[in-house]
Amino acid sequence: MNKAEIRKQALLQRKSMSPEEASVFNLKLLEHFKKLGFSSVKTLHIFLPIAEKNEPDTFLLIDWLNRAHPEIKIIVPRADFDTFLMSNYVYEGKERLEKNRHNILEPQKTNLHEGAVDMVIIPLLGFDLKGYRAGYGKGFYDRFLNGISTVKVGLNFFAPVDVIDDVHENDIILDLCITPDKIYFF
Image 1 (cartoon, rainbow, N blue to C red):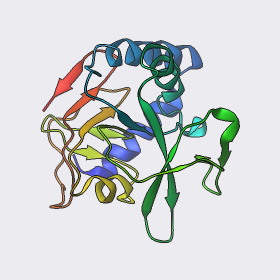
Image 2 (tube, rainbow, N blue to C red; image 1 turned 45 degrees about the horizontal axis):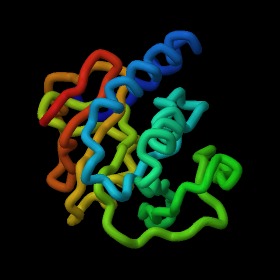
Image 3 (cartoon, helix red, strand yellow; image 1 turned 30 degrees about the horizontal axis):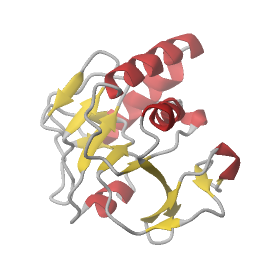
Image 4 (tube, one colour; image 1 turned 30 degrees about the vertical axis):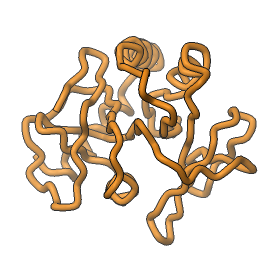
């Protein structure tokens, strides 16, 4: 299956999910997320969900991290759609977020983070059994992850496809991917 087919299928699957089904899936994602090791994580990058695209609710993960691991600095991205690069900002609460022109929540008036990142929670539409992912196709995360040493964690509501046929040499492989049913390690 190629990335375009995966994107189309995943967007249809997400669109057809009821709010109740999404809520159950999100709680299962959180339960698996809690099983990860956080002892060596000082800074964690996490994407913010696009509600209109029925993405996994990462605010559940953020709230849990703030309670269970208040020592972890949480950073969130701000995307530049002219350069397809991301900047990371310290997460300081929902009240400091605003939607950009693409309906993506982004930090406003918070501190830029330019240091190391120990774990990255990555959005995706699908993934395969080797750890390759299909995102929205702009390459933001592949550029961001290129050349940094970090634990790369995908979040997805659905099981993987066997193989993504059109992986690119610049595609970054996940270390693991959390689904409602299980954690896949690569």
